[in-house]
Structure formats: C-alpha cells, structure tokens
Image 1 (cartoon, one colour):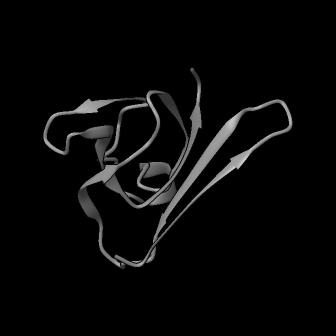
Image 2 (cartoon, helix red, strand yellow):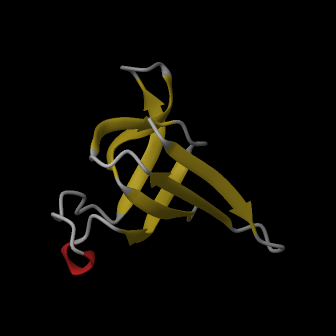
Image 3 (cartoon, one colour):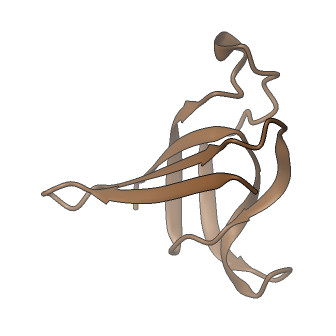
Length: 87
C-alpha cells in the first residue's frame, strides 16, 4: 500500500497518529486499527484547501469494536492524516 503510519506521544501523554499514503491514488475504506477512543483530525490533505477533493468531511472518528473486522478501529479514505486521540 506504500503507507507509513506512526504514533508520537508527548511528555504529558497526548497521542498523535500520522498516516501517510505514497500510493499515488486514494485508498478507500482503509481500516485503521487504533485503540478504543475518539480521534480528532488535525490535518487532512484530502481537504479542498490543500487541493484534495474533500471526501473526508468528518472531524471526529470513534474507534470502537468493528464487527466487519472483529477489531478496534474504523474505516476511512486515506491520503495523509494527522489524528489526535482526544479521550
């Protein structure tokens, strides 16, 4: 998938997740396996203000038990995202 994902944790425990696709094409319905909680989009390169098509309009995603994959996480269209865990 030509995908890089990494997690950064600050000294005070805040978690930041970076998801970057070098695929050259959008990846639809990509399953992100993340710990249970809410995630706020800090940067989304698919936003029209960055030249994207604005497909991902949600600002908050919930990572819950996903029945389709039987794991914690959620599906998303992936280009380049920075997510902050907010609870």
